[in-house]
Length: 440
Image 1 (tube, rainbow, N blue to C red):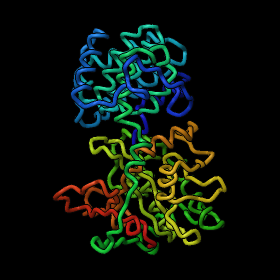
Image 2: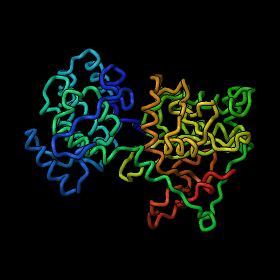
Image 3: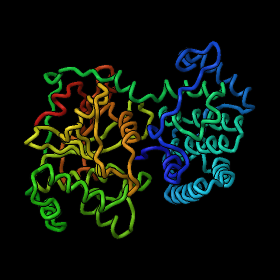
Image 4: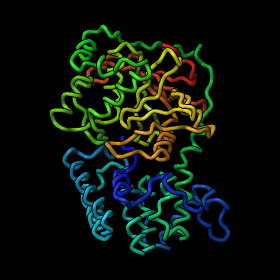
């Protein structure tokens, strides 16, 4: 998972950009004749006209970016990008904006740029826009911002609150782009518009299977890693939270990493220790899932999906059934994160989603972090608002189920407005949360 474009995250850590929700900026004043809140409340044809007008205003040509469907960068190229990110973060931290922009300009001019992940492309342009804005070059800043939007940038909260963009907030071109991103990426509003479910359990029966802790592979995992000791002697809540924290500290998150085979907890832990490498959120959730199964808890990893099918950035967490609260607890080993209500009651995944929709308070675990960097609750909430549109999980939860040589079957929970795709033999689709979140 790429939580947000890499450069945005690094630049924030370096003291540059403020991530979504970390500061509140005044709502920009639209130009005369624009709609009251944001200038874009029009048809696609009008959007195209405004983009053409904006290209003339900025002296830049807006065009669909190459490589929007390109695969992730090869490992060597990914390593190069990460190295550049570190240099850019350092330059922003030292206020050497021109040098940071030089590195980014070389990236976007390279032959490899079109093969990069769309998030990396859009974040590269976005950070160039922030640099130009800070250097007092508004035309260049708006042009780069248009390229970021043209290549898929859609983080509305980021766009609206980033202090690096304050010098250009009243620029007519910025306001047009803000409107486009608002339509595209106001994730909380999108979530609230897709909150309706239906009871269709009678027409879509699904059976979930959970492997016994006596399975030989789970038994071996439990003994080799002394999972009983790691979980501790507290109640079930304390034990599963201890397991999540253990997974989080054992391996680091790397959303651009290749996935080792076979994909089971024992092998993933062995490879990460031997190579000093990280794994993606799906594999971190897999380790926690198999650790919980090894101690006899019913658990499964849950893929949290965005509404946009073209958006490759989903997030995978783990749901563990606890008998005392009678619900599927939300556990995110990537961020060492869980949610409670203001009274400290641990929340389930559907409870978290419903509270977001209703605007009710959510308390993120105080030690939530990403690879050691403290996680801002507003950033995390904004990210998960995007990825709590749909949920998918395997029908079978067992050791090594994620390995490529296994036959897989999934169940997906969508709201009633989302029609299931045709000819998907591997996934059963339902609108019924009672079926998807039923007691195991």
